Image 1 (cartoon, one colour):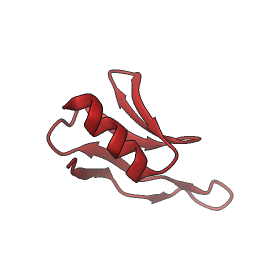
Image 2 (tube, one colour):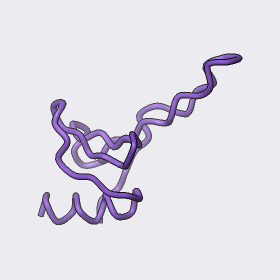
Image 3 (cartoon, one colour):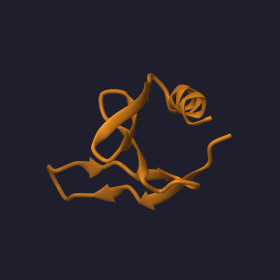
Length: 67
C-alpha cells in the first residue's frame, strides 16, 4: 500500500484568484509528486509515470509500477 504525505496545504489565492490544490508526495519516495491536473497524475523528475481517474485508481496503478 502506498502512503501519501501532504507537502503543501490548500491555499486561498485571494478574491478572484480561487484556490491552489494541496500537493502530495509518496511517503517512502518524496521524489514522486501526486497532482490532480485534468486527472490524477504521479510525476517524477517532470515525467508522468502513472495516471488515474481517481486518486485511489492512480495509487493502484502506481503500486503495480513500483513493485
